[in-house]
Length: 437
Image (tube, rainbow, N blue to C red; front, side, top):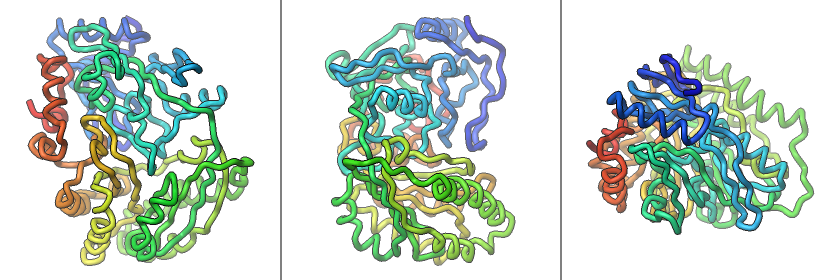
């Protein structure tokens, strides 16, 4: 078995989750992965696949067999007639994006981080922001997965459509994904317009800003009335990337270098946070640039944090955000990270946070090592009062009883899990909590 070894401690990116599996396996093919699942069954061990650890929950943690994605990478096929690309499950999004760009192709939409593997990102429902274009999982046209009995199952709208309806965001509960086929389109240009805007103005005009832009999002800086807005729209060009110095200033120095220093200071001396926030949120300047999608949608994230994000019915988001602002203002909380608001159209995936409803997201973050429970608990109370659905890969306290109410198709998913994994080969503590026994 290539890469099979003893075990080592596994940690996620944020460092808030660790696991000590009985053994690690790095399969180089779907056949090797299937063999690892069969061997685990013989030894009475559970199986979990990990990606790059960008989830803040214990979704991938196991004390059984840990499947590492390192060797399951690369593009299998580009089908220009069907306009699809099929990739191995462990391929990092950044490698997929760069490879597609070389072929003159692109995904339609993506999240703002591209470190994750394609399987990790889609299985947890990773998304960007979009008026018409949805999450990465909603762009899936076909899936290949190893199920609990060690067999290889392929699914699409035509083949095993019931599995396809659920497995695009499968939480690792239905099997281990080995390959994904995505819809792609000819590469295009996006013009990004970033502009500071007052909180009251953004919230008052949110519906118009959403309607007028293909991809709208904004960040509110706690302890201030200031926001930064981002509008990304398709453009005829020409390409006009940010200048090297200004791009470095905005994306590296301010977003990573200076921000790291500010967060460290805030963690050491929380009382400084509100005044720093007022200065830093005013230091933002407007800028416009045009580039290919992955260079606009994604940005490096080197400052480590923990995050909670809730999906709300789109019409509820402004009211909920105002409640979060009021909460911060009346509490002793000191929050150095901006609060992010994004949108997604309704989709047809059983456990998608946007399943069956037009959606907006509110994400809250805390710097790594800062106690986050008080803030997240208070925000979560606001979100659940608005029928919120938490991101599967981010911190939350919800359980199966809550999800049975929050997702109209929850029972459809759990019934499929009973059929595909009756012995719970792919179970772990997180899945027991969110899906039930």
